[in-house]
Image 1 (cartoon, one colour):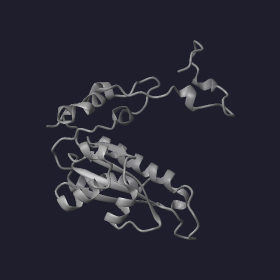
Image 2: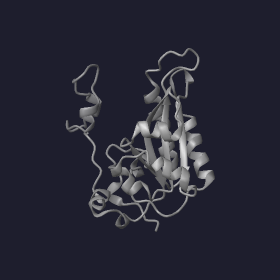
Image 3: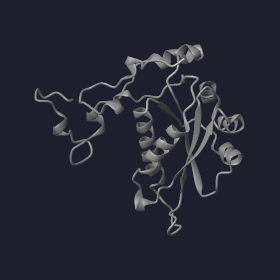
Image 4: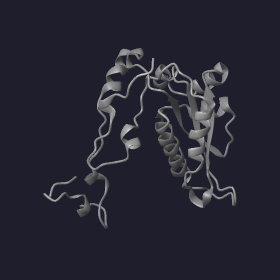
Length: 213
């Protein structure tokens, strides 16, 4: 069953942000609807165009669709038990990898994870634009992923993600249903951005009445 967007998950509008950012969230309930090959090509193409240090593009994706049970079960086994409980219903799972070294020199690439995160953000927003949702997971078993999926030694297993269309929270275990319907929260901007040096309040974040935005 495909569901409408849960309104409580929509981000606030002060200050205004792009509609795709407002609508993006990380569901655990996915509809029993496959992601078409063209959709997968488009979200991965978006990731391909993310910026990276020296244009290294250190990210790689191992993709498994539920239409291929052997590949899907292989990736599912790379998640921790808590994530396997709900991710087994997602139509697509991906492992996200990052190459630790620069291809042109073999030197360590300290920016590899940062750049890979940008690629996943691009993928996520493209998916949102196409009406899909992405749930990124840090709860993975990297050694298991390396063994099961033949990950090369010079690549880190960074995260996994589930991708698909929004489903009915009622299909989730009871303890996850409340989390699925709970509001999203974020720290205030004044905790995240300073002006000129650490801890200096950013004047541009203050509203005309003197209160922080």
